[in-house]
Each structure stands twice: as C-alpha cells, then as structure tokens.
Length: 573
Ligand SMILES: [Zn+2]
Image 1 (cartoon, rainbow, N blue to C red):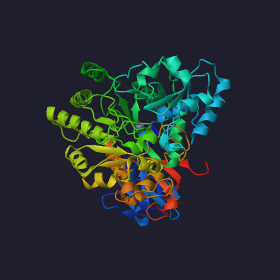
Image 2: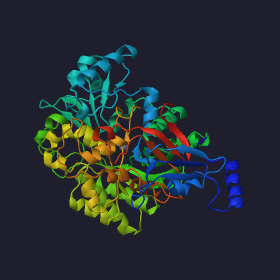
Image 3: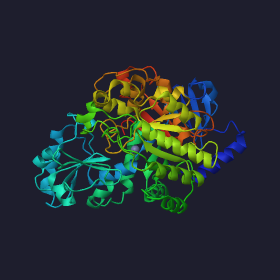
Image 4: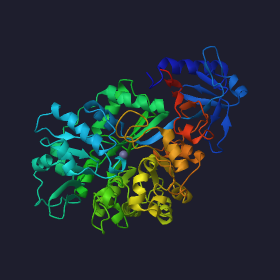
C-alpha cells in the first residue's frame, strides 16, 4: 500500500502537468505553518512544503507553496510544529528482532538476580536435556557490572544446560559444559578461548567460540512477514523512515523482497549481506561470485547494500581487539586476569585483507564490524591494500563501530575515503561501567565523534537495534532522539559526563542521522534533507530538537511520520 504509487496516480499527475504547466500541477500533499529544518547545505528553515508523486516539489514560505494547492490536495496545518527529514538508522537488525520476537520475546534483564529468576521461570517449560538460551545480556548492563558465574547459573538451573548469550561471549552452567563436552582438557578453538580458573577448570566463560556451540542452538525460525512488518512499524513511530539492515543472509534479503512484493514494506531498506565465515580466499570468492544480485541493485524502497565481515569482538564483553592491554582494572568487568590480554580478531589479518580485496574487485562496498583500535588498524590496512590492488574512487568502504579513535586513525580513514557507522547510545548505556574498567583517558574518546569529524570523516550515528520492540528499553534502544541526546551531551545513563571532548552539536548529530547517514547507502541525492526533488520523507515533532531541553530531547516522539508523501504513522493510532 505504501510502496509504488498506483499507475493511475502517475497518469493523473502527468495529465494535470500537461494541462496546467510544469510547476503549477497541484500537489498531492501540502504542509504549511510549520518550522521545517530542511538540513540542506545551509541548514535553512522553511514554513511549508509540497509533495507530488512521492517527492518534494516545493519547499519555502507559506506563500511560495500555496499555489500548489489544488482541489484534491491534502492540506495539513503544521500549527507551528517542527518538521525534520525522515531519520535514517544505518545500523539495525530488524530481521534478527523479528526472528527473536517470534521464538522468545525479548526481556531486558538488568541484574544477575533477574537473570536467575528468568532462568528459573523457564525450567518447568523445558525438558531436562533441552538447552536454555537466555535473552542477550552484556556485563556492562547488569547491575553487578560483571558476567554471572557458573555457580550462579547452577544455582538457578542445576540440571538443564543454560547458555547466557553475550553475543561474542557466553557463560555456560555445569550441565551445559558437560553436554558440550568442554572439560579441563579442552583446547581453545582458533581465535577463541575457553576460560579456565587457577586450578585449570573451565569457569563457564567462553569467548569467540560461535562454532563450538552452533549445534546446540535451536534452528532459526522462518521470519513471518508480519513480525518484520511490526518491527518496521515501531521504527516509523520513532521517526525512522530508512534503515540499513546490517548483516543479513541472502534468505534475509529474500524475506525483505517478499515483504515488498506483498506491498507491506513500509519503510526504505538497504540490506547488508554478511559473508559467512570462510577459511580461505577461494571460499570468499565463490560466495561473492555466486550471489544472486549485484551491489546497489534495487530501487528507492529496497536495495542490495554492502557485504559485511566481522573482524573482532565487542567492548561490552571485553573481546574488542585493542592496541593496549585491557589492564587489571578491567578484570572484574570482563573476567580477564591476564595483564597482557588485548582481545581478539575473529578473522586473521590475511583473511580480512582477502575479503576486502575480493569484494572490492567485484564492485562491492565493503563494511567491517570492528570495535577495538588495533582491529581498526587491521581493517584500514585491508582497505588500503584493496585500493592499491585496484584503485577506485568513491567506494565508501565502512568501519562499523570503531569505538576507540585517535587523530592519526581518523586522518588515515579520511585519506582512504572510509566512512564510519557508530552508536552513541552505547556511550549512554555503557560508559558508566566502562569508565572505571578501561580508564577515563580511553573513555574520553570512546565513540569519538568530534575526532572523526575534525579529520573530515563522514560519520553516521545509529542504534544497532538487535532485540525487543520498546524504543528505550530494547537491546539496543532505537529511539533516535536518545542517540542525538547522547552524541550532543556525552551524558551516561547515570547523568555523568566522563569528558566533554568528543561532544558534537545537536545540529551535527541531526545531520549524522539524515544527510550524512544517506551517504552510507549512496542515497544523498534522494534522501537526508527536505529539498525539491528528494523523496518526501519527513517527521513532525511537538518540540524543536535543536532548542528543547535535554530531558525533553531524549523523550521526543514523532507526532506524525510521512514517507513518500503518505502518512505512515500518526500519534494516537
Ligand atoms: Zn550490529
């Protein structure tokens, strides 16, 4: 319904254009009496806009736009409200959210006690040999600021195998270790670790061992279209009109395509395809050459995006690959006791270089999940080598996360034309736990938006939404105004500011979720600002996000979201 305009509409517009002259054809929709932040080159404001055939045809004063009102034009009185371009969340996992909500609706567990209670609640529903996978938890977001211990899990589940899912790290109870055959004699898998105590016994904590546990995971369900559609509805209600799905399979792309064919794709999606873990270049080459589509194929609603690899782990669980050791202050948070520990690469540098070189050669934009500073060095090496092998302008290879930045790294990224996709709300959620563990100096530049910007790197801020449907309580919160709040205040959840050195202005933050975000998917000519010719996606707000109070900013909710000139969300619905 919200996808292609019906053929009849197209013909009607063409017909009336022929009758009345090109500029005076009546608009489908006019919004007037508003305060429109166009986010154009000059950051100009306007009072009215007109839309025809899904695109803005006029933006200006009420007088400028009035002449576009015809007999059939839908006219909306903006009543002085603020209007911004549709927000672009360049990093979400809507497919994963839909899949998880289908099997086990997300519950935000805030402490080890809540985790234990959740596990106890599951026991009566499960056979004794059935594995229990908890909702995703990160030690930085548990009240205790540490992983649960094996003993704490045993206390909750003495018999059922339990896995606490921390993405790139897991904690197993005794029954799970036994069922998986992980004993004191077990060797670390390549690139991963089975953590053992001083007596040589597995503590239950496993880092980067995805393959080891794969066979105990329940097979992923087929994502019902209504579940994905429902996630998208939550985005529209939050003001998000375009997303980049950041790590789908080819099947995931087909789910989007099915949604589109059913006329139920309600927002614009670019789908990133993850390259499956490959041991050698030949495997990567075969995967890429065998893909059923090319980079960028699609249209304004659904497009094939870049290819993604995962280069290292995560900073919420202490597996980011760092230049300097984590240090003993981090031992409690991450259960790390080796003073030389620097985290992990999940692929070797030659594997990372091979993926970039092959993708680059086949014409793909390449993106890498890489959180630690030493990991970013390896990815930039790979991009530099790929460019040297086959120089090509404007490929927009992208560093995803890149949490620890310094001037030299930022300058190097700028020189290589590399873009950054990063998540300020993680600073808000996690810096309270990370600061004592990693030190104030490292935290001062954690998600260093100012450093990237000063070097001239194009940065998109986004949410990395993975689980749950509540904009503020999801893992991770997908309320875009919380992201803008965190970027512009550098306040943590407890209200502290570790250092204001990386603070950016609200204007810059808004720009990073609109104009700058559009460049990640090569869409800057059609999205990211309210200008004639661009796609008619915008959001109506009760307050001005540039001037309202900080408290108000992070709680802003759209009154109305319009996409392709059609109202797709309205408060009170
Ligand atoms: Zn992600």
